[in-house]
Amino acid sequence: MIKRFQSILKRFLSRFLRKHKDVKIGLYGPPNGGKTTLANKICKDWLGIEMGTVSNVAHETREVQFKENVIIKNKKGQTISFSLVDTPGIATKIDYEDFMKTGMKEKDAKTRAKEATKGVIDSIKWLDDMDVVIVVLDATVDPYNQVNITIIGNLEARKIPVLIVANKTDLKKAKIKKVQSAFPQYKVVPISARNGTHIEDMYEAIFDIAR
Image (cartoon, helix red, strand yellow):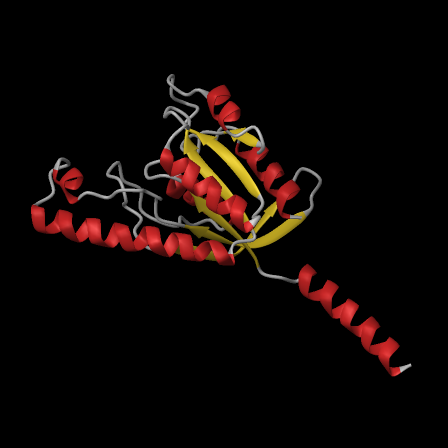
């Protein structure tokens, strides 16, 4: 009788903890794909505040940033609460000379490169805490590259649910079908984080994958 009670209690606690788990959704992708712009859009929509600073210079986000208790609602009126994690852009090579080309002094460029490298390492480490990952890709850039393969490979190895967002659809060079053909195993949602285009479709997709 005691063993049966313990078994029932264990199953109940297991369901309770899964239901009340603090879901973590991470934004991952290469530099300048629009992760922080998207994070700002999500936070602005549901929290009324922005998350981070956006820049045209790569690796503006060099530390993991997060917002807790982000609650979004779908078309059916259902809600889901999660912690949103914005990560530094993943890169296979970071050269300080690339920052100097943007006008930075050598000392500042080396500091930026060092911080960016640490940010990439931290991003990979944070994958172990993610329940869902939204991979944010610039739809104007060829998706067949080493960085994207590295990101997707890490996610597949960890068996983390993935939603791919093809961002910057407001630009004429955006090629959504190319992103879809590159990753046919995943759902791809085309959006413009800057203009808010198709953001509702992304929220619906988040519901489908995070439940």
